[in-house]
Length: 235
Image (cartoon, rainbow, N blue to C red; front, side, top):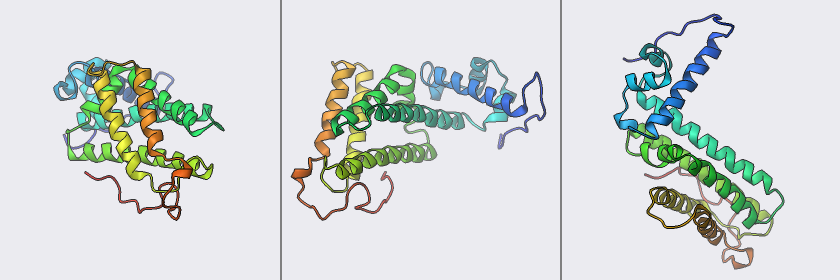
């Protein structure tokens, strides 16, 4: 099927067509979180199975999405939005505090969000990988957004005199790779540590990359992420 079916218009049962559409979409994404993030996983889920889990018809599926890959793409973005909101909330709660306290608060909130539901962890680190070039571009674009998030915090730390002025984009990319690998291994039971221990280790890694201001060796480099052109994520 090359496109979505046309959707009904007008009010029904006291709700507008837009409200009914949003409800159907939410039900499909909720069902996808259960099936893609649990059993049987994205690659073994069918449109019929997803529709049944959502309590909707396959016709209604095609009114909202073209393919199951579209559902996974939407779910991946939603899970990342939840994690970003958690990190921002943690950061806001540490406003005015030191770099170490801000980094710890933001990352602890992020980790609690993505590990609090193992299905979100699986969507973020497992199911999205290797599906298609399109989803790989989306995954890398979202990673680039996290890099920007870290670089913005680094730039603020430089302005407060807590970090050396340099380009932090490469360090941020390396940190995100460490986060992905360690949280995946921890969730799989391959790392014998508590979540707090994992978070503390990753925060130490991040703080080690954001050098103290008195350790700068290239004071002429601009702060944050503007010191080098943004070439985008590399494959």
